Each structure stands twice: as C-alpha cells, then as structure tokens.
Image (cartoon, rainbow, N blue to C red; front, side, top):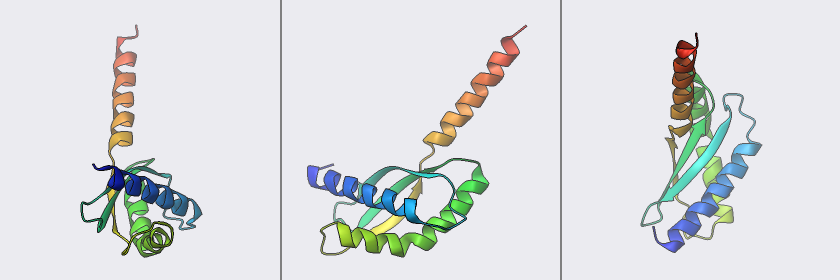
Amino acid sequence: MPERRQRLAAEIQDVVAACLGTLSDPRLGFVSVVRTEVSRDLAVADVYVSVLGDEEAWASSAKALRSATSLIRRKVAERVQLRKAPEVRWKMDPSLVNSQRIDRLLSEIHRREQP
C-alpha cells in the first residue's frame, strides 16, 4: 500500500478507536480496532475489528457498530483531511477468536496428557 494510503489508514484507525471509546451503546462489547485499509480511490475504509466473546457478543457489537457508522464517518471527516469522507465498512478480524480457540484446544490436549 502506498505511503499516503497507509498514513490515511492509520489516521482513520486512530479516529475510529477514539470514537469507539466514547460510545455508550450497551450492545457494544469489548471491541478493538485491529487494522484499517483504505481503497485506492480513498472512497472506502475497511475497519477490521475484533470482539472479545462469543458469536452473540459479535452480533450485538456489529449492530452497535452499524448504528454508529454515520457518527464515526462524520468524526473521520472532521479530523482527516480529504475532500470526501470515506465510507466506513466494518469487517470481523478473526485472529482473536482463532487464538482463543487454539488456546482452548491446547489446554484440552494438555489435560488429556496429564496422568
């Protein structure tokens, strides 16, 4: 990714993370912004988030994120210098879920090997 897009992605990620910290939606669980990717034409920002918990926690948090999208886009427009604020799209980053699953499997294996 070219340097300008990387810089914009980092700025957008910072703004989104700050906004998520101020939301008071009870549906929003423990959400972390993992990374952000900006399209070549700068029209779309894919924000990859990780949610602590199960699929129900993800579904609840996804609803909260969708309802906060316009607010977050406005905040991005205020703080990032672009002609037009990019569309914010939420993407699930499965790395936290995968690491929890691996930890659980390793624990089960370890328990089975104990005499």
